[in-house]
Image 1 (tube, rainbow, N blue to C red):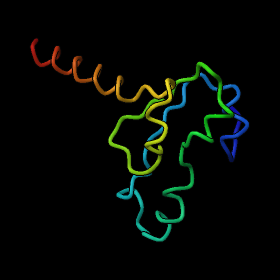
Image 2: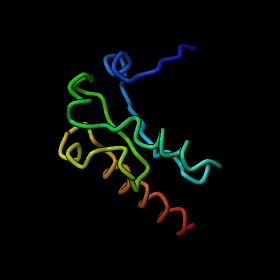
Image 3: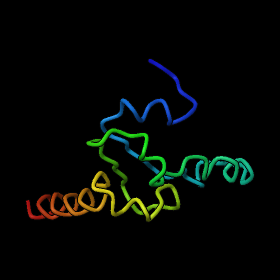
Length: 95
């Protein structure tokens, strides 16, 4: 297990970047939430350091952790991820 304090070094070796929001409801102290809520925001600039074929996933909805400017990057697969999840849930409900 390796511990890192930033994304920069990891992006060069990452195949899948799975991003989630910082959950406000998990914090007792609102100030602590505000301190960390937007610490990591994925932007087009962030992705310049990433592999050409890495993918960015997110469970949606996003709350500022991925810039909408990333949506047009071919590595952003979260809308496809959302669509495929819908089909899986439809199939499970049909059982």
